[in-house]
Length: 139
Image 1 (cartoon, rainbow, N blue to C red):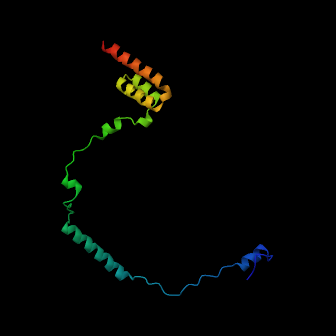
Image 2 (tube, rainbow, N blue to C red):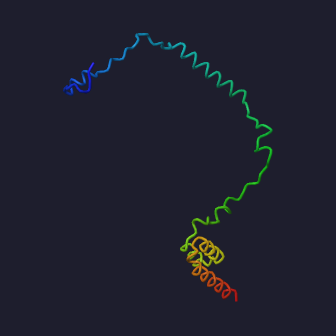
Image 3 (tube, rainbow, N blue to C red):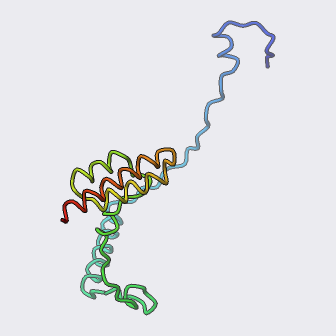
């Protein structure tokens, strides 16, 4: 063996640390002969044919939620039309105002008042201006 303090060249170190070769057993591998492969294949095809002829059907169990309750489909579009509060911005409120979607603009400014209390006076003024716009359009 060797120690770390020994001085050797790189090639000498490689020779000293060379790993032992892997010893492999000389057992012969078992291969299926052509006849048994053919028999196995035929057996599988017979099994498939039998399955197709019997036409088994999967019957849902009594406790299955799909059969016990007949739920009406939910309108998912309604859930996605409401904007999450975290995505509400002043720009979006202005877009609603330009689109003359006044209710959404007012709602946006109310959310912005909660998110940005330092600008609450400005947003309150915007809400009042929108309400005046609504009143002037109605009359």
